[in-house]
Amino acid sequence: MSNLEESIVLITSASDNSRKADVIGTGFAFYREDNYTYLLTCAHVVEDVGGNENVLVNNILAKVLATGDIRGFDLAVLRVENINNIPVLQLISLSEAKNRNFRTAGHYLYGEEKKILLETVDGTLGKKRFARQNNQRVTVWNLSIKEGDRLRKGYSGAPVVDLETGHVLGIATNMEKDGAEGLAISVEALNKILPQISPAISYFYLEKFDVITVNKKGKEINRSSHKAKFFSEDLGNGIKLEMVYIPGGSFLMGSPENEKEREDNESPQHQVTLQPFYMSKYPITQDQYQAIMGNNPSHFKGGDRPVECITWYDTTDFCQKLSQKTGKTYRLPSESQWEYACRAGTTTPFYFGETITSELVNYDGNYTHGKAPKGKFRAETTDVGLILLVYMICTAMFGNGVLMTRIKTTKMPLRMAVLGRKMMKKNIIPYCGAVPGTTILIAAVLRFATTTLGATSSTTILVFVLCVLAGELDEVRS
Image (cartoon, rainbow, N blue to C red; front, side, top):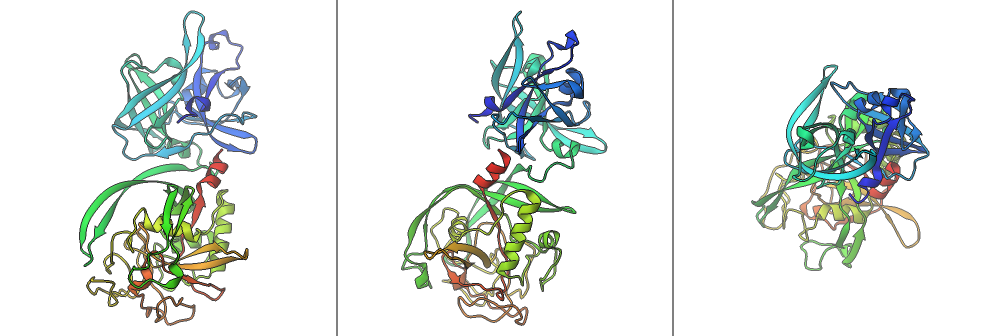
């Protein structure tokens, strides 16, 4: 939020028409690539300053890439060269935003001298409406301005910044009642007026989710609601990949010596501090894998089921091809990133408590943990989002400088599903070629800290999770 004013640009006219001299508008930077900065403003601002050929951004001639209909999607996308000193604001799409607090900043003319000033105002989002264009619709919100502040004529194109997330959720388009109220169109209009937008441009969403806690017998004793920020990658043909923001912080990695069924390789416990990063909301699905790799090696077929029967080399190829497609740096999470996301601030063996049940995790419920009752054995994978996962793959750097692979058997607070392919003992990795549908996944190997070292090109990894470091994402966007 500290860089809001620095991200604002002044839009004026390059026309020699004297009537355009006092026409101004506001815009802001939302993306940068090479030496070009991309900006948003209103379509009516472009028209007011004299059209596509007459748009000046901070006195530099801009190229208008796309404009919506003034009576529909009142938004315009500009591109300017050599203004790399302007900070980039991130975009977020909110399905429900009523009563959320916002901040915006815009230009206006002051006094008889018509001085151009920049001022910040606060307010609250009101009623949700819809703007329509070409049989499509986009959310529009009423803006209620804080008493003592008001919108002004030059504010058109100003970013409406959600105070909770610090991201831009809309663009101010109109003012009413002498600036005490106004309208803002959602950033989702961007993809409507410029569908061929660069895949490196992502906007964020905010989603509610529930976290449960169970007792030693596996019965739910508490349920609480939380919010997570995420962005979505378009993989083509309607296939999306959702990446969830994991806040940075510190945690105690490993397990205490008195934890039930722990292994020696879970010691010693040690403090680890991580920077923020993004991790995929679910395991990579078969549809997502097919969209990037062009094939689906899975035995348990289903587009929304996790991809399985893949090797570590397959996962790294997937990450490389995804990185090339999106312009972001995707890779497997480190072991510490994985455990940190799994624990989600908890210290119990499982993020929801002391034990698990087959209602929470897809494993052979005949093998129990603690005082939990026996459960079911599904003998197949399920769609992601229905139930939790068992296996994933991550990378870890060892003291000899060799990048190894560690199979992480754990659970995380993002709903996932998995099943193996072979009867197995604790900490034995399933291999490709085994009889499908006969794996016993034992509760003891599902704990946070359990790790099995070693994966080769012949190892079948049942599911895997991607992450992209927040710093790398910001680097793409700034």
